[in-house]
Length: 379
Image (tube, rainbow, N blue to C red):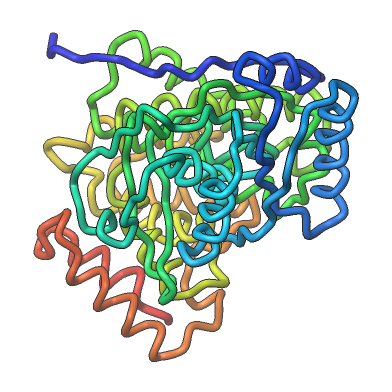
């Protein structure tokens, strides 16, 4: 057996209405917090109002920072950093999905410390800050897993995405309250749910998970495959609960096992085509990845395991093309497009995507060129 490790310091408070424990958790650190939220729609406004009502009831002081957008920009985050530097807070509360939580991670780490975040975009160092603010996460989607990871995905003003890592990015507490996901529309339920499936499957394929986490990982993959298509047809609380727990399992898996080609290439796609969200960008890459790596010496057997989990009709899969068809059928069930042509890509956008993928450094271009050619074909 290979030597493996597992580590995740995030304490999870799990269950219906677990958010009610938020004031008690905040008071362990003090009585004033900064709330990070993107409340630009009715559903998120209701969730934000519910949270601040809890804070008001316990006489907890708070300010609200709203300048967060999907694929968060560092220039926006710097406005929140200014608030952190000018006001004494005891904790940060992040209410939302990955964009909000990732932004909150940078704010937390910027407390009483001047960090050149642009420089960190190209740095491999893991920033530490003994004065970081405790981060309490309230996820409102079941897909990003950010509340359980040591990573933050941030964009510059050209919308180029960068991955930042620090063990100080781990949240102190996260509240897995599925009731907060009940109003999530089907499109986001599907794309964030597929993101969670990718976190699980990619970390499984990487082969770095400990035997303990592998059991959790495979079980969570099977639960998403079983529940997500049904949830899109019927918004049952029990389905939402399963997805919320599976999402946390996915984040924990990602924090230990890492991701592979779909995430690396998906982030490049959404960097250049802002209207393609993260989960949808993964769907564009994943079928081609499955096909071209089906017989790979390192990853092939684990890819076959993943395909079997979504092989609802128990079809005998003998090659990459058949495996790709299984993945595409799964995406069809989720109503997620898996071709760039579905997004009316311009020639300029296509060239930017292709150049970005050909110039990435993580994977030798010759080993992934067939995937690049495949996903960049609009026909």
